[in-house]
Image 1 (cartoon, rainbow over the protein chains, first blue to last red):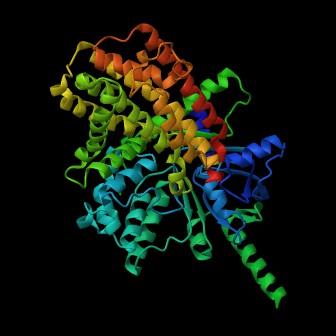
Image 2: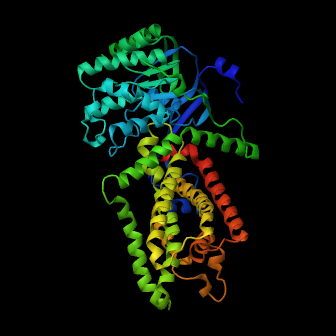
Image 3: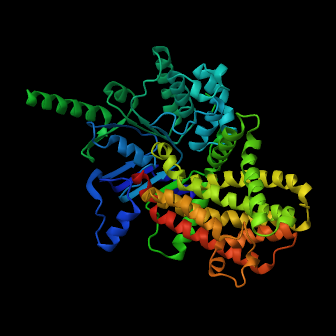
Length: 262
Length: 291
């Protein structure tokens, strides 16, 4: 059992030699028939056709107050790493420790129910993020204020436009005070006016969180928001350090690669 | 920005992967159970929300929502009373037969609806599971809770409707909550097992419907167990009969169930929950990759 003292000293996120393997199945709908045949013919997991290590031997310690930007090419494992820390994927090997409340801004509107009203969806989404009804009711006014959708509070979500939907999703996800905040890029929400508000709100959210981990290709934003960078290549950490150094290295490599290709 | 300290979870929870200790020791299982109970309690707002939204979706939009859900059992029972009271030679006592049918049919509905919902509860929430962390136990638990609420509502309403036919309140009805608790524990165990297995073997979902149909006829709901000269093996081996029998004793006979049947049903309920939980625990971390 953790004591109060050690909980405050221990880093909020620790990855100890973590690997994550995805297995592609020829047929996801593995059937009884197949299972029985496998059993009779003593085939070992015969239906697995390809496996792929999305993350390989990741060792990280993330301490309080760190703002981390994750860099890497498409398919380097950035989003997978984020999902791992959000506990959506359990690691195949290694040890993952997450201490504290986690708010994943990974997919907007996870768990929204189109049949329910906007207000009910706020409560439901809040519950999924780990906040009680009372806690969400306290935030309700702020959320309507921010989204400017107060007049639609009692309308079922299915009648919302997609812009309204995204605004509400964003407002709910960013209204909580997480200890660990995970942000996946593509936070472009709504029209230009709203985007500025959204940026401002993210900044406030960053200030309230103990740990922030951002995945993005927007180098300027990363430079501005983060103080530590982690670079992934093919599921491995290839660089870890101050954000400016990492971004410079990353851009340098990209330039060299482009020059080499010419 | 107002941030209220009180609304934050009081205990910062810590998650470890894999679980801290290894092996199949009983201590590990105890730790796992305590962990999962804590997780479920932490997620109780989610469960509450899932149940209440289901109820709302079912009852809110149509004025007669609740009546519609009652219509099906009423019609079924009326038809079956007409047919089987004749067939089983109880034409003269069709009122008694209707109450007997009610005592078995409505609890069976709880089992059937819970299990067929549970079969698809994890697959059906794929979108959610891949986007945000939720303990997957939340889904079968909320499905069973939802069915229990529906069951309780229709139980009361049907009982009122059957008063003209001779249904009478009696003291043993006070035992019903305990019977329902035992019955739903049994159902939850089975439901978790089916929910988890159906994620791996998708054809299981189709078998559930067929299996339930067969199971229904092997359970004395339409007919009385006493019509068999010797107690047949399929009643001895039928766990559902323990619970259905209890409901029949309490509702139809107006008697307190004897200790033997209550104890047996409690044991079966715990065993069922244990099996379901063990299956869940051993496959929990693979679920998300199989969706």
